[in-house]
Length: 302
Length: 232
Ligand SMILES: Nc1ncnc2c1ncn2[C@@H]1O[C@H](COP(=O)(O)OP(=O)(O)OP(=O)(O)O)[C@@H](O)[C@H]1O
Ligand SMILES: [Mg+2]
Image (cartoon, protein in one colour):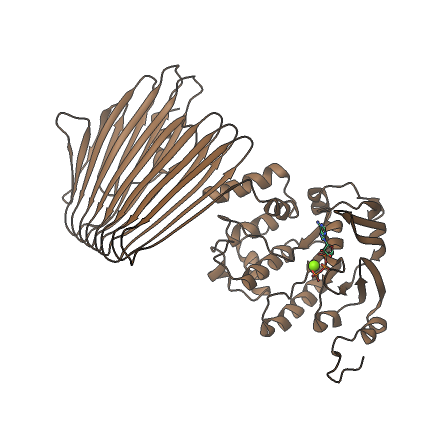
């Protein structure tokens, strides 16, 4: 698969009107900055610092990573310093095309400092491709620090082809901060995916909504852990929905801790096969079993 | 023409349908009868969701008893469930697209047929975010959109508010004028029963009465009830 093709999949064909930093096979491939957004390579480590000025509004910033050959293992640290009163979209993601027999691995730690009253939409897509026996491994870690009245929406999607992934997301929310995380994961074959969420609602009136929708097919295995602490007058809702197909296994281990009398925390988890009645409804519209199953799964992960 | 011949159905050692012999032609047929009489079971047997324990089903003289749900759907049988099905992730537009090959604007008309504003609903998820009545209307719309020669609606009035109910009755009439097929309505509502050409009354798994509207309607004591001056 060509580099451009892989980039388009990872970024969902987004056009970066603002700044961008494209990393290919472990090296900087292209970078553009502007007067509001500065991108600086880290010294002594792989990765970048992204500085977004106070009041930056309407920019889309892209920082995709692609690996097009086997035997690359990298750890990248990216820090996002987002000023006050911003409203920006950040598109990250990693695509690995590995046709070799060696493991390709991208581990990224993305740390966000979201300034007061700022609004960030963060989209991350993961995709693996390649017929070779080489493993495609991604371990993304996201650390989110939210200042007063900031908002962050994080959408992560692991499309297919990733053999092994451990995703860890940590967040600290100040007064009035609002965090929404939507995670979609599809695993097939022998793949394994683990998601760990560790959220501290420190501020008064802080809110977190965490939703995980996953499909595990074949012999794949997925595990979901969440540890959400309400340390103030706050609200959190965690929802974990999983569809299992064939012999796949899914685990969900929620933990919600109220460390404050006004904390209100909800957890819901549903794991199971596609509901029989859903299949029956689509069959009665004239779809065959395979089409019905695909329609249900596609909708669920969309 | 749809024909059920000596259809019986048992589940968990209980006989739910007994010797059903019915012929449905191109008209409006209303099936009524007490809760638990076997109306939904009969509908599911026609759609192929349940297989009769014995007996046969013919569609235009072809034996379809062993046909799958998909095969029957493709032949032109459609069924609106009594309990609408929820889907996480599927949008109203998605289900309409799966129901019909028509495009955008004409799909919207199926929503207005059931009293919903397309603009507001097309992008909504078919999940618990919608009210029971809204889900029910969308279920009906998804079946209207199929424009099948054989269409079964299982208690379409359930959960629909009174004001919208008369519009719904009109929608079924219009649909029948357009499609001119076999429209089977399972209903307890007098206003719905009134539009029937043929009425079937079921009781304890059997067909108790079947006949033309003017023959059966007067024998039904819907308006009356014991002890409140009814004409029973
Ligand atoms: N799978 C099953 N196993 C055992 N009994 C069943 C099963 N399905 C239905 N029944 C029973 O069969 C009878 C008929 O059910 P059915 O749903 O067809 O009734 P209905 O006429 O549609 O009633 P309603 O007006 O309440 O919708 C009921 O007594 C019901 O409890
Ligand atoms: Mg019923």
